[in-house]
Image 1 (cartoon, each protein chain N blue to C red):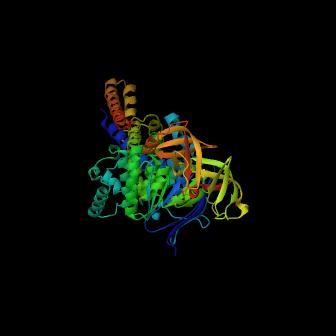
Image 2 (spheres, one colour):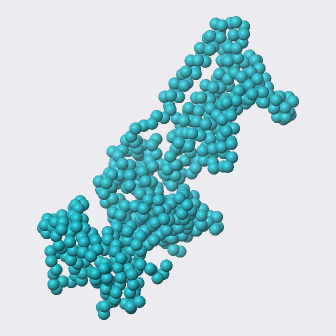
Image 3 (cartoon, rainbow over the protein chains, first blue to last red):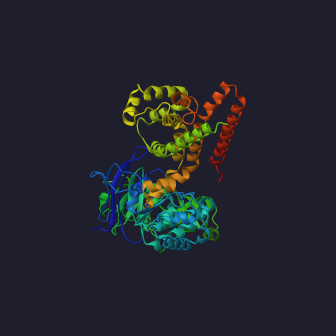
Length: 373
Length: 220
């Protein structure tokens, strides 16, 4: 029948709100679904229900033609027979077993020669061959997560579940492991569900992004789509839109572009998602402006493709890694991210005037009273 | 030195420890995982022998298992004998008295194991039974050992309940503690000294082993 994992269930969360989940993901090949949301939003509960470690109060989980869970029919498959690989937040390596024995833990029935071969292969692939006889307490955080992933992969799982796999590592290591994890996931060709509250991790790893808050899925899609088209204010904040201001659509021009009024300023933008070019679209909106979509100019330029050029005054300048965060005031306050070298070239100082340019498609509008809610 | 009494005491301590290991471990596992409503009541009952005088336990056992007790009539009908004044009698009494010394440490040890290790084992395809022997038991072993050692040491010196149930039959129910009591009654202080010293040495050694095995907080 279907080659998919179809989950539709709900469970009362410990902090008394209801976690509901409606997910569908392919059951073959490389595909990473990322559950993204703040701590305590229920995303780990979803993962644990998929693994069979927690029981939903209602609903179903189907894997191809297998029933993993059907609460109405009282059918539950144990975690043992679901054959999923689970990676816990801090690895959960067995402290009394060596690294080699940890990786081979799920293969007690396999002939020892074959098992050792598989352990060695995995250790080599993760570049930790020298750790085979060490105990978990004697390895570093990054190595621990590699071993935990190798242990989960050793039993050839059908689905990989990763619960905040990098959150216990320090920032530097996390970045490095993120790239490594991406490589491993694309190499091992198993559908994966990953839980994270780290935006960079979600962007780096997600084929399909699921945004969760207080137990509900707010929006899902590719991360590119979700990040540039947040459905509502909450999603916009979660995906890190720096500036959200209240505006008003005052008209639609002949080419189908919206005119948005924010105080004294008028912006040109695309219509809100799903909106048609009629006058009924006019009304209050949230205007989402992402800091990295702005270009700063010393003065207005004529004959340019960019539709919006906003005069403003530099309020503050704050370095942020390779980038600089600049707060502008020009009728309303907004944030712009440019590179350090660009700042040096422009020699900008607080109090000076600039022009901030942004293309019409980069402005995202969210109706303030969504009609379908 | 009363070597016959020594043999009886050793026998009693070893059998008590073995029985509580075999029966107590699954019971402690159940207690550690149970969410039964009356679990706390059960736990209080298990701890009772720790505070109750052994003579009280002995007295109730004697009335229940004596020839006129309802349990005694049962054993009489089935086996043709009753428990008082037999080794089986003092063994049963000793097991009951030692329940808290075994089960409380077992339960604490099992409860102390991080749930993630157990769940990780399940997700790696290992059944509950295999998870118990491959993860829970080895990780809980220091605590289980503490329970076994405490039980053994306590059973070795058992006095009150043995005297109530078993009396003082050499080679059958006369344990080291009873031998000491007898020796003191007979003003044979030298023999009492020797036996007491032996029990003191065993107890001290055993507690030292426990101290070595108790898991210490490791700084990471």
